[in-house]
Length: 92
Image 1 (tube, rainbow, N blue to C red):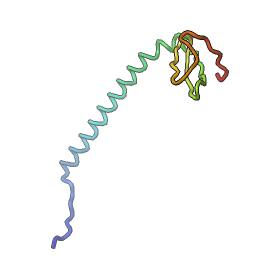
Image 2 (image 1 turned 90 degrees about the vertical axis):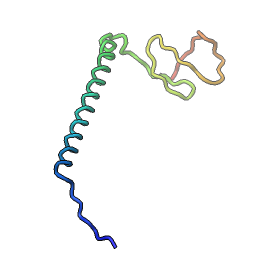
Image 3 (image 1 turned 180 degrees about the horizontal axis):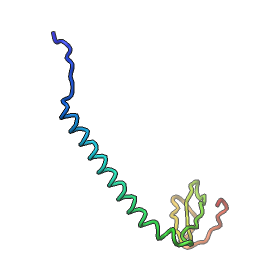
Image 4 (image 1 turned 45 degrees about the horizontal axis):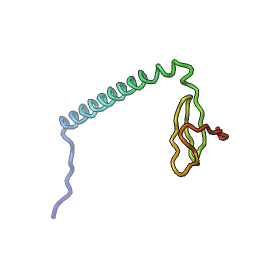
């Protein structure tokens, strides 16, 4: 029959685990910051242009779309519309 044993981590192993966890956390933080800076550099020019900030949310075929000037939306299913037809949107 086996007796229960008390298992304690070795102090050097615990320290190594803490250092490894800290290094992994720092690396994750650096990746998150780089991703954030990358996204900011892509978005900032668009936000600076006041015309690009305007949008509308329209309701078409039981679906909502966020649109800006010049956007195209592709409607799926049977539709009596032809490419280039103009439509009147009432739920904006």
